[in-house]
Length: 223
Image (cartoon, rainbow, N blue to C red; front, side):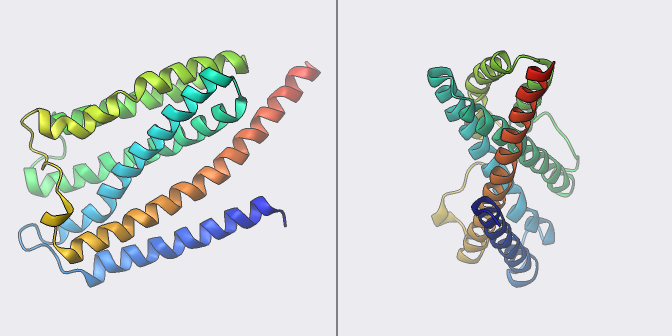
C-alpha cells in the first residue's frame, strides 16, 4: 500500500467520522431554532457548503495564477480538481438554500441578489469545466482554463458582499458574537467536517487528473 493510498484512507476516515459527528450533533443534540424550527438545521450543511465552494474557487484562482506564471501542469491539475469539487459544493448550497427558502420566504427561488450571484458563480465554473472538455491541446486547455479561473473568481467577493451591497431577502453575515454558542460550535464542527471532505476529494481527484494527463500523453504519442 503506497503512501498516497494511506493519505487517502486516513483523510477519508476522518472525513466520514467528522460528517457523522456533525450530522448527529446538528440533528439530535442542538435544539431547534425557536423561530424557524427544524428547518434551521439546514444551516449546518448549507453554510459549510457555501464556504467550501468559496475555498475551492480560491484554490482555482491561486493555481491558475501559478500556472500562468510557471506553466507547470501540476498547478493545472490542482485547479481543475478544485473547480469540479467547488461546483458540487455550489450545487449543494443552492439546493439547500431553495429548501430553506420555501418555508421561510414562501418560494423555492427568487431573483434575490445572493441567489442570483451564486447561480452566476455556478454558471462560470460549469463553463470552466466545459471549456476544458472542448480543448484538445493540453497546453491550450490549461492556459484558457487558467484565464477563466482568474477572471471568474471576481464573482466570489460579489456573492459574499451581495447581502451588504443590495437590499436582499437573504440574511446578512453574522458575527460569531451574535450567534448562540451551541449553534456556533455545531456550525464550526460541520465546517471542519466539510473541509476534511474537500481535502479527501482533492487528494483523490488530483491523482486521477495526473493519471488522465499521462494517458493523454501516451495516446498522443501513439497516434
